[in-house]
Image (cartoon, rainbow, N blue to C red; front, top):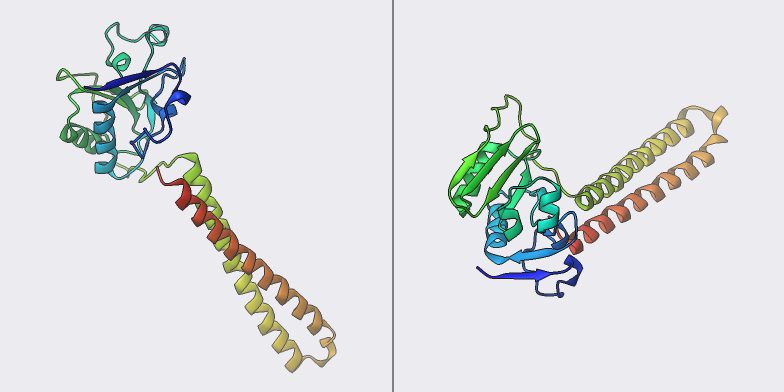
Length: 224
């Protein structure tokens, strides 16, 4: 079991962090910023993320001894070894999650349905707490990090703007044609409608540009 300690997660050298779906800040102690990199535990965490195919929201990972005492953690908590993770169930079916976690090699399980998370660690084999009740409604498919939500929101807004503007442009063109053909008394309105059509076209182009930018930005940052 290889471990490396850092006084702060910002001290992790660039290019040495190899767990693509997690950041040093997510794994570091919430109270002090200190970080113990337990490579075996993080390998299993990444394997669990890959197996489930959706984000893992880390409530707690490494805890420094002082922070562990402050939060009332067990005196020999696996969190202090960087070998335990508390993971929110807001976007997971607990039964599916537990099965996947056991499959990748986690041995210790703590169930906290009232707080909405499951504790997993490298062992020894044991479990505590009452399992989550079976839900009759569907679980949310995903709860992505804020940057994913932002990218998706920008994409939806851009695409929506482009779509609405395109429909608006077409509608104005139809109205313009009808007015020109059937209502000689309102012909002075036709030029204004032509201007409005170009406004809608400009909005459509802007929406398309926003969609492309959001997709490229999301691709560069990577999905969690």
